Length: 140
Image (tube, rainbow, N blue to C red; front, side, top):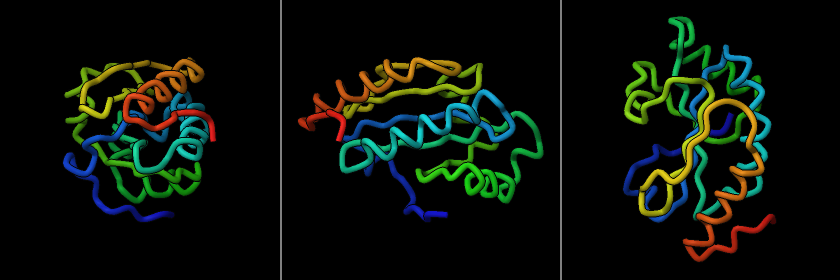
């Protein structure tokens, strides 16, 4: 498992950020993970950050060891924040798992999607926001 330095709001300034709200026992969430990993491989760099926000539905999903095991099992190679009290979840007004929230380099929410699918649209939105930062935003 990859160790990441703590992310800060200051460190995310000027970056396109994708928040992937998920929980490890949700089958719909699990089915999005390969798509998120693909986006991570394609766009990770100076201007794009994908953050998994693990927002548990059940008590056993709050155990950090269970989350770490799931991250390893699903081969997640991007940072995963533990949102055990669902504070971040609530801040973004979420009601469903999974949910993707795309934030532009100025910190504004620019696109949201609940559930599975719409991966091509998500990729288009990422490219458009990367272009706004001066990055080409094209497939590597």
